[in-house]
Image 1: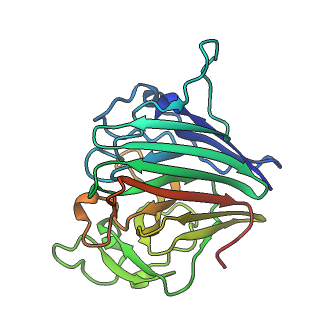
Image 2 (image 1 turned 90 degrees about the vertical axis):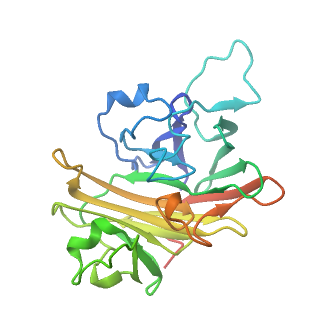
Length: 286
């Protein structure tokens, strides 16, 4: 069935609603009034929804350089146009950052929605991009990805692993759904943990009761993956809350500074990288 998409171009292009015509809202939210005043260089403000994180997620700038900047409709509206939320109607929006420009066009489809992206920068520019989607899921929800898919775990997982964390390692690798013995395909009830992982797959399917949400990424010649953020009341320290992220990515690391060969997207001589995010309400992955 179609998905109704609403975004907020004035505040980083954040997706604020991803709702089925039957009324299922997929995006999780939390009260964060300071989000509206966030400026470039600020620490990330987690209001939920889906944030456009580029050219990095962790590291600097925190969650990237696009989530704090306004997105402008192209071509500009007529002078009598009243600005409002983007509603997945095929309009093109652009955000201009210091080293790159990113455009996005969201369209409704009979089976869901799709978003086409174009990043323009100097040839050789390396970046990570994530559709940082925090989903409103029950503790029975699961993520379906092919068994045996290589998966990276990051240092916050160290206390949950059976052996010591390798000295100086930015990540450790294992096979989905239980890399290094840590089961990741089910979210489960709150247990005071928070784990980030990157799975070497172009897409996945989320199951929550009878509902399904499939997320798939297409990007010729670029590394694609799915990042997971399973925060079951373990983050942030002092005032933890539950948030569950399923995030299609270009790249294979959270922090661009950690990217080795093949771990980040790279702008070719054409000066453009194009990709498509497809969301559907049926399972495409298993």
